[in-house]
Image 1 (cartoon, rainbow, N blue to C red):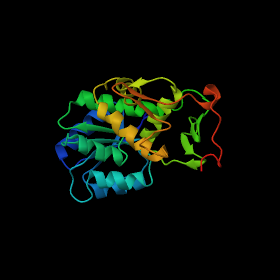
Image 2 (image 1 turned 60 degrees about the vertical axis):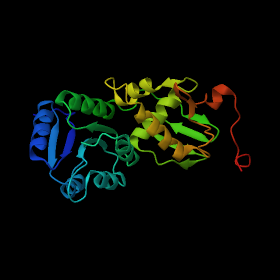
Image 3 (image 1 turned 45 degrees about the vertical axis):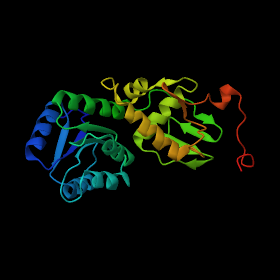
Image 4 (image 1 turned 45 degrees about the horizontal axis):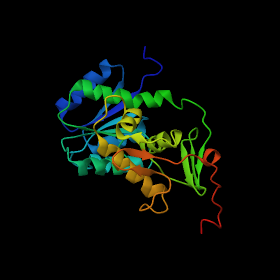
Length: 247
């Protein structure tokens, strides 16, 4: 009998040995697993079945992994862990820009893969830990319960991971968070040296929420240290911006 909390993973890889390796180890860890040999098959399965996580290879014929990721992000909020033999920073940035939640370079150890899968899926099961009041500061509102951010009342289209990063800074408003602290809080305890992850997501979030990215209002850089968000208006005493004052 399957456990009630069994989570469903789609493995997308054009190499049969890799699909077999991933399937055996994921099933042994208690996950329900489906396999796709190319991007077209993956998109068909995603349309027909709900998944908690995609393990998505980049180098495939037909729709490649990045094209699949781009298509999925138009309609789905499923977690995506990209698997790739490309380890350059620009390749990771491209995947994150398209909405990937994590990026693992080949070759990788099974233990590391399973640790990352567990860290990603733990957030699906955990959900919201506490009912916090929304963060509000000069037109920005971060609603933790609804997992929603708005600027001047306009919804900001954040990916799941972008919201988690923004929400972490908002919950810790006034504090400077180190790169390592952000990595371990959002991605998991096995992270710590991937500072480019934090930088990439900070830039993506700023593109979406900041009126002027050259002089950020909400997500501030502490050079050589990390990032912080200002205290919310209810604590800092900063009066809210009115529609006329924002013009």
